[in-house]
Length: 229
Image (cartoon, rainbow, N blue to C red; front, side, top):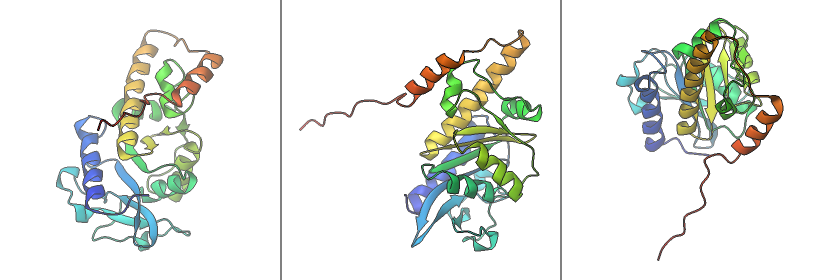
């Protein structure tokens, strides 16, 4: 687990700004967090509520302990945490392997979420989210414990989901991986909207998707480089 330090805070701010630069978020919507340790306390750093990402300073990020019962009053920082702080907490408590969480309001993925349309196996890259589909968590009001639980439930076995009438939730073993997955979900959503406009989507069958998912366990891995002396 990483430590709450200047390097992590700078990386988290870069990730938050990258959401808008990549076009998967607009203005102050969405939020980003990273699991870390602060002294003896385990928790996560998260972006504050209501602050434009371009104006973020390292001191603006908020540390939230991962201790039950979850309580916003336990926040450590000069600003209040994102309204979705509990959704991030629930994902971390559900998934010990997750080190970062990214939440966006990207256009195409949010459009599908608003229509309660999951993204099926129309393209093999759907497997990047950890399953044969990218599903939709049922609508719950933003910033509520109910939404936090619904989002975390959807990420119990997959790494991304859509939030009905809301946006996208993605996680990963690093800030870079979580951000990359959120961008991939938006790309797939855009492709799927186009495919739907061409007629009934043609889907990859279940057996083939199982093989794709098996291959994705080691997708992108490179052999360790030999150190020359």
